[in-house]
Length: 129
Image 1 (cartoon, rainbow, N blue to C red):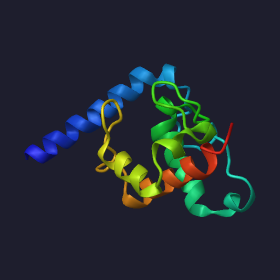
Image 2 (spheres, one colour; image 1 turned 180 degrees about the vertical axis):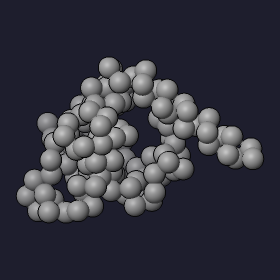
Image 3 (cartoon, rainbow, N blue to C red; image 1 turned 60 degrees about the vertical axis):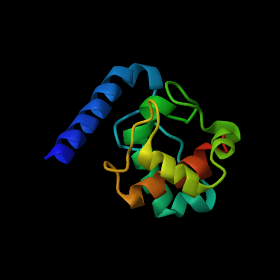
Image 4 (cartoon, rainbow, N blue to C red; image 1 turned 120 degrees about the horizontal axis):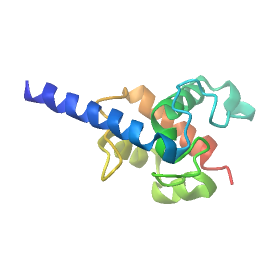
């Protein structure tokens, strides 16, 4: 019962934070993949990367900006993300556990969703200027 109460508290906090920060982050927050950059080249046909884009739009763009340029959360562009997380596994672990104002998504997103959004952020957003 305590675990359920804690989960409800976390989800409520994420929803409240998202609502409060919606104007700051500049993200689409719609889950439609309309606000973030589309993958190009071979990545445009990569279903996992496109799924990561949808997760990004829905859960991440509000704080990190629709194009990954930052806002409430840090920027991903220009290689900054790759500097902060040398490997995808390091970033996956961070997304799952959270820290500070970064919420923990380990109980909100599936492992597949976390891996997909990390790929999208690293392979599409982090290489953009």
